[in-house]
Amino acid sequence: MGVWGAIAVVWVLSLGTPIAINLFNERSRRRERAEDIARQDQVAVKADETARRTLAKTDEVAEVAATVARSVAAATRTDVAETHAQLRQIHTLVNSDMTAARQGELDQARLALIMLRRVVALTEAAGREITPAEQSEIERTEMRIAELEAIIADRMTQFRLAETETEERKP
Image (cartoon, rainbow, N blue to C red; front, side):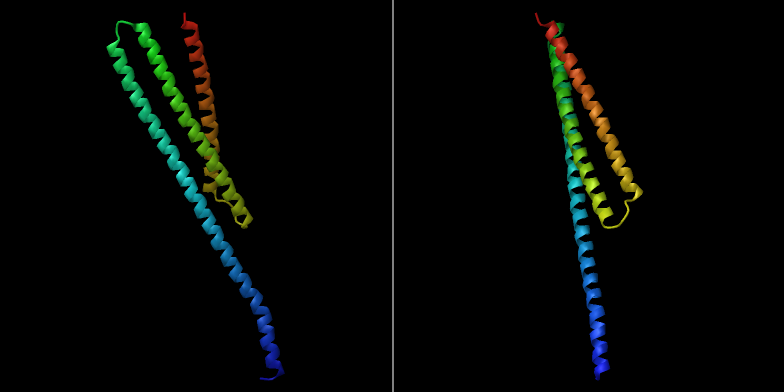
């Protein structure tokens, strides 16, 4: 191999090495992004499962409270005022549990929205556009947050009204 052969080898190596390094680095970045998105998906799934379990537990508490309310009403027919007060108390407790469950769901939805926004930021940073389905999910989550905030605000108003009525009935 002559001088021209050596020059050709050096020329090929000088061009090929940076290209190979860039390809390797790009593969590594893609793998890291995929792993990060998978981790975020796992967190979102766990948050969703927690919200579902919270709602299921709240329904269970409401059913128990309703059963207790029926039993109390049947056992104390002679004192309607006392039964009414007890039912109101149970209702307040159930509403309190429901409000806590809704607050938990709201917290989970806010967390999910944060994660969705981070995924969008990572996606855009990677030079890709978010899909319409992803955008739709973000909008759905934002609407659910607004809905939950309204529900909780209404529940708090009802709770304050019930407290006021209870205080007014005390001798």
